Length: 387
View 1 (cartoon, rainbow, N blue to C red):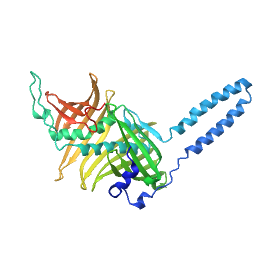
View 2 (cartoon, rainbow, N blue to C red):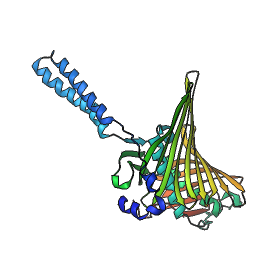
View 3 (cartoon, rainbow, N blue to C red):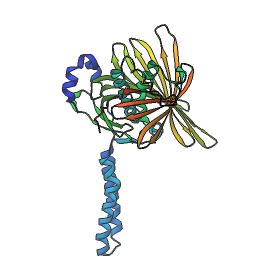
View 4 (tube, rainbow, N blue to C red):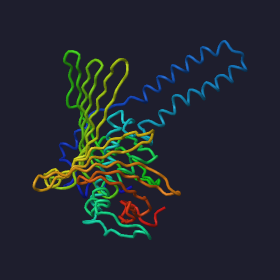
């Protein structure tokens, strides 16, 4: 990992909040150590009392066995303190806390930042390599270079959400020299098993709390810096929860500054409702990309299950300088063909329905269309000779 002290000092003027904000840390004492010590003491006392009724031989064996059990039950959580993971499958269902969301936000926003920075002005020219006896179809069966660039922009995020690997995070006390109270390490995985790691330094503040009748409300905010391994980005975020009887709503957001009046923001809107004894939950994740003070893109992401197979659905809205909006809908499903990882894609782009396949290879994405044509694109963060 980079020397964060040097990076923070070097880029302080461009990405860090002012001194007053930096020093706004509040106590978020977790109290794990005290609770664990109390549990160990209580359990040890109980074990000693019970052991008096055993024979001397059984006393020794029983005490040893009990000590092992107590160690595994109580000491292991201490060793794993602050660590959590969002496993493969529908990762959204595993986001149950603010820290889970901040970890997801940091990882997903980092992939979009890297994709934007590495995106080419235009996709490579289509290779009309139709085989013998294959007649090329009308142009709408393929994608334009601009449409392929749109798909390519989100493929790193698609890989993260459809991979079998977990999004793991662990929060610890940050070094005082960073100016932040907490440091969260976040690791993710792509479809070929490649790992990516990020570090989020942040402070958290309780900004509002209250109760009105049977309704309660709480608001938290965070501010900090995201180290993607390629650069530092000033970030902010927040959590708002409202609960009333059998209903609860929560809103979470995470934002990274990418330039002057430019940023990427992800929001979670979640509703839980209990009806006839059954709990229903709805989640929606929306990414907003702002460039130069204007909304350039807004993309909604959700999981869908079709015939017991997990799919990822994206709705991408792009806004032109004249305010014109273009809406594209994409559905991705992960497959394996002859040992190769393939994304089956169904899409409605520029009003036309189409389907195609994307082979995920080290260093590139290979698009293949039904008319036999294909095109290659750089794969974010991976070289052709990577393992």
